Length: 283
Image 1 (cartoon, rainbow, N blue to C red):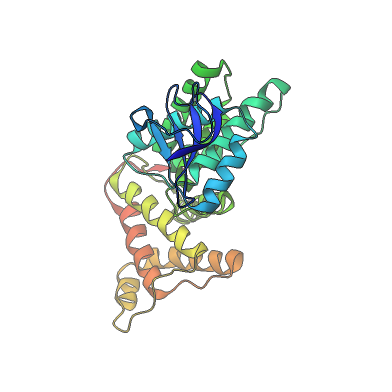
Image 2: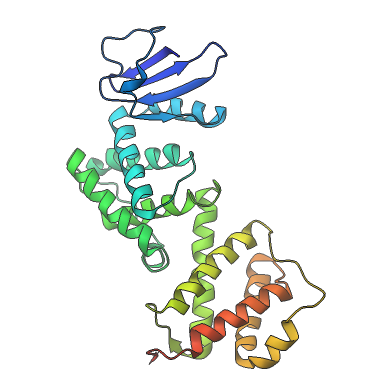
């Protein structure tokens, strides 16, 4: 592949004979190079082989921000993937890079954006939030800019968003709100404080997250002829009463009708998270 454009000594755009493009990063990879030169791939540390639309957006972004911010974002993404043991969608290279660059550039101007969902993010996405806190340390080490804790919440949501098949940040915020509201319905219905360190609580949150995703994407579990709905409803009447409140909430706020199959899973998870033996304190 040959060089089409040199962004700086460490970031260049390549193209092959078919017109396919690739953005690559590597220390000194663009030093003393010119357009149409052939690249030594042993110097490539990171390559972006992404869809055309994503590639175009990434190139446009690189043209608007310091390329050091792309390198910084890439370091944070690689660190997060390692710590969380997963692979993000390519879109995070655009969304997170843009967010971090804007946050760094607006900081000297005293523009601090409060994160209204910070408490929920810390609670429901604890692993992503912990990694995001360390990302703030990386940013400070590399740039000298000490971003506030609110930014850790925003970065954590980018990590969450990149795990959800490329959905936009608006949907990620909606998911977080749904999870928080449904958890509160259970807590206030039973008048208890749930043990957030228990395995059942962890399972409950996982179910809520995937349910919120399905709700927003109209992917609810369909009705089945031989449903367990009546059996579970009779077996766990208090969990059923709570699940009905959840069903009403979703119908009123999102105009979504929850299937009986989804209700079965809710009743089972609600029973587990409220009836297992662990410390439960009165509110």
